[in-house]
Image (cartoon, rainbow, N blue to C red; front, side):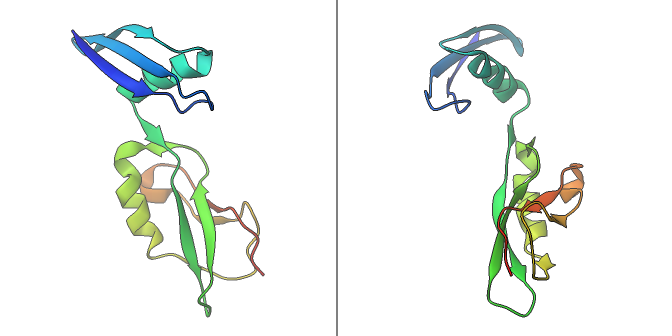
Length: 118
């Protein structure tokens, strides 16, 4: 049996969760105080995902616009997405929610602006 210790990021409580696995299959999840913690722990040990935040340069300016993935992406794609963002430039004005990069790293997830820039 394998036990994995996690700190939940599903809410501000930061519960210490223990996931027990046997032959790669989840046998028990303990230590969570809400459903989000239970769901987070199961997902984290089987298919971890993350939201990526970064910045994109604006054309003709030293200014950047903050951005993020519109949804969580597989953890293994983080560096590929960050590398792709280095090649992206946007044109001002930019509004919150504008798509700056579609289908980032083949994930089907777009990169969207998180700030208004004139």
